[in-house]
Amino acid sequence: MLHIQVALLLLLAICCTSSRTTVKTVQQGATVNEPIISVSTLDKHDQLMAYHGGELSAQYFCDNGTCHNHPESVCQFKIYSGDLCLIIPNVNVSNSGEYKVVLNELKDVRTLILRVEEVPQHSLLIWLVPVIAASVIAAGLFLVIRLKYKKPGFQRTATTSI
Image (cartoon, rainbow, N blue to C red; front, top):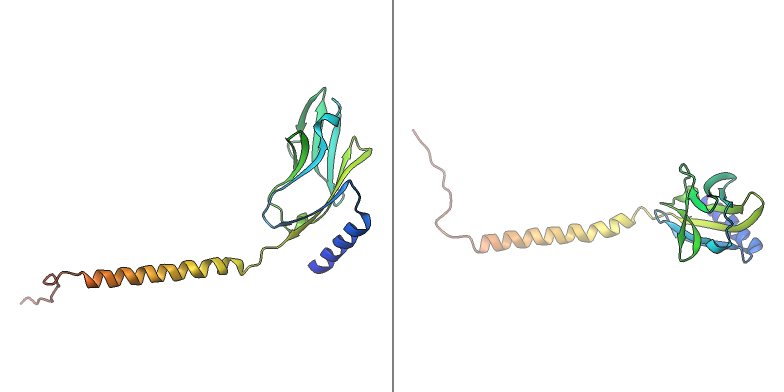
């Protein structure tokens, strides 16, 4: 199923890519930081919204020049280097798809097609096996050194009492 979704996303990206469309591939768990619009182009009463799968994901309001995010938004808009960026935190496969950013409910500003790659389950084992091997080697060296430098005469002997 995932392969079909990826193929459809790539087909959509090839057919519909324009200067306002960005295709981005990230790994699961990453945070997406995508520039959307220059802050200088925003008016003092503008409203910017990001939709994912038809649902509102982020909302940015400007009221007389004072701008802020909707507090319950899953995603956020933040200003970096003069651009208003869409921030999608801790992405997973369900975040894959099209994000459409709209200004004042009228103008399509940007489309982001996000592809999230799953982290393989065996990647933990690839990291864990050398750590376990190094721990076993260190424990073995510790025992060898301890036995080699053990002082004679301090061995405990069994005693019996009557």
